[in-house]
Length: 246
Image 1 (cartoon, rainbow, N blue to C red):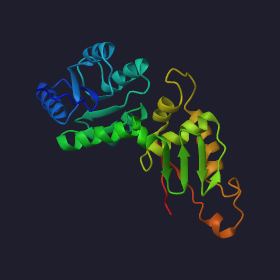
Image 2: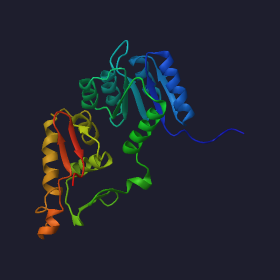
Image 3: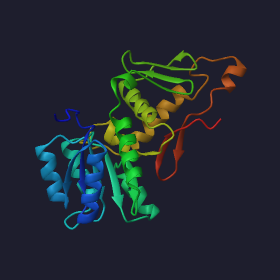
Image 4: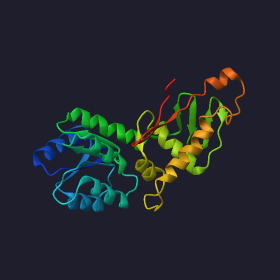
C-alpha cells in the first residue's frame, strides 16, 4: 500500500555543488516536500517553466548567473514566488543585497539542515497562509480581517485604501521581521510596475498617519491615547518592521 499523503510544498533547490544539492534535496524530501534540483540558473528556469513551484532555495554563486539575477527572472514569471538565499557569503552587505532584491530569507553555509527546513516552513507560513490563519491577522491591538476587509486598532475602525490594506497585511504577516522596500514592491505592487521604490516610502507614511496616531483613530482620552505607540518602524538602509517597542 502506498503513502497517499500529498507533499507539503514543491521546493526548487539551486546549487552548483552536487554534495550540497543532493543532501539538501534528500533532507527536504524526507521532511515531506516535493523537490526539484538544479545546478545552474538555466536549469532552474527550465524547471519553473515545467512545474508549479511553492518556494526556491537559491545559492548566490552559480556558474552562469548569480542568485540575485535568477530571483529576478523567476519573479518575472511568478511575482509571488518566495525565495530563500543559501550561500557561503556571510558579509552583511551581501545579506542586505539579498533582501533588497526581494529575497524572503537568507542562510549562510555551513548550515543546519533542521534550520533550513524550519526557515522554509516559516517563509511558507508567511507567504501561503492557510485558510484558518488567513481570515484574521492580529498584532497587539491591531487587527486585519481578510474576509470583511475591516481594520481596527485599539477597537477603532481604520479606513484604508486597497493598496494601504495590502501593505498593512504584508507587514502583519511579517510582524517583527524587517522587510526591504523591494520586498514590499514585489508583494504589494505588481512586479512589473515600473515606478520607483519611493512609492513605498509614501505609502508607509500614509499608513503611519492612520494606525500610529491616536488623533487619527479618534482617541481623545489621554490615557488611551498614551497606549497608542508607533508600530511601524524604519530600519535605515534596509526597510521597515512592524514591532511593538512599548
